[in-house]
Each structure stands twice: as C-alpha cells, then as structure tokens.
Length: 237
Image (cartoon, rainbow, N blue to C red; front, side):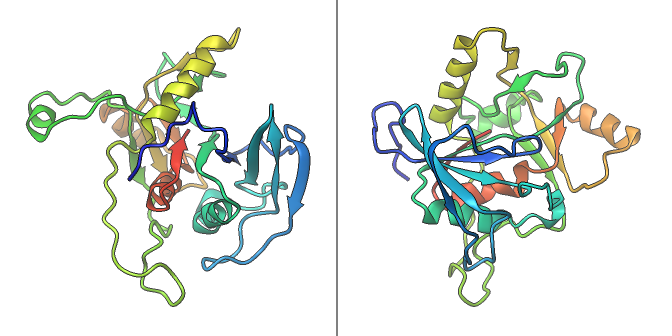
C-alpha cells in the first residue's frame, strides 16, 4: 500500500467520523447534505455532510446518527466507511468516547492512539511491552470484514495485518495538533479494550483489562479500525 504524504497533498479529502456527543455539522463551511444512500452493505447511520474546514475538503459521518439512534452493536460500520469511500475520502479522523482504566487518564483528556515503531518477531517476544499503543477487540456480534462471501460484497479472502492498527503519519499530525493547541491535555499512548456493550463493563472485567495493560475502554474502535484498513483508508483516532 502506498504511503500518502498527508502534509504535501492539497487534494486530500478528509472523512470525519463523529462519535458520542459529536452530532453537529456547523464545523463545516459550504455544507452539502447527502441523503442516505444504499451501499453494498446497507445504509449508513445518517445523512453524510460534505464541506470545508479551513479550506480542506471534508465529509462528516455521524457514527450513531444525529439522534444517537444506534448503539455500538447495531451500528453499520461497513456502510459508514463504504459511504465515506464512495464520496472520495482518502483518510479518516475518528472521535470515540472512551472511559479511563488508569488514574493517569483524567476526565477530559484527549488520547491519540497508534504506535511509532515496528517490533521484529524476536524483539516482540523477548521484550514484550504491555504499554503498546494498540487495541484489544472483545466484541463478538459485529461483521469485521468486507470479504464475507455474501452476494454483491467484495470477493476473496482478506487477512489484514493490524500492525500498526492506526496510520503512523496521521497519528503524528494529531499529536502535533494537540501540542500546538493551548490548554489541551493529551496522551500519546494507550491500549484500549473495545467491549461489545451496550452495557458497561463490570469491576471484575475492568480488573482483568487493567492486568492486560489496558488504560482506556470503549465500544466503537473495532471493527471500524479494521474495516478502514481493508478499504485502504488512513485511519486515526
């Protein structure tokens, strides 16, 4: 897969997936509403809205719908991402509400997920770091591939590498933006555990997740991260 120069390209179209609490389109100028349309995987959660932010072309997707109509299990992650791709998006910036499993992660902290290095197999096994910036997928009721052998869907079999799960260059731009924004508290590293929901985890489950090295917990980063990689979309959260 080719590496996209995110800083040099002037033609990049950015997809923004808004999570819980992110349901306004007035961040966009020159807004155009795209009525819900069919994809091979069904319909997205809501109308998509295209426009610009500081001259950059963007398409906004409301993950749960404007009225928060879908819980994490019932979301059509595949249709949302397919619709963004169909509208010409090159990369995806996703917001996702997470809870803290660590005293170091206070309420209101922004977390930029992703890693900046690659472990060799030998290095990985000999020097395992429990604080790798990754996700642990504990979901169990969600289609997690576009290649599911259903009529009209992508054909073949896909074994997608999830290292790294998030785009490195996009991650660095997000960190840079956080560092340059006054009064923003942020973390550059977190392993997030993604649970099925819609119920929150029990104390016993949290104890297990903490023992695994998880510092945040959420419900929507998977399969979204996986599916974005299958479509060749640079993804940052």
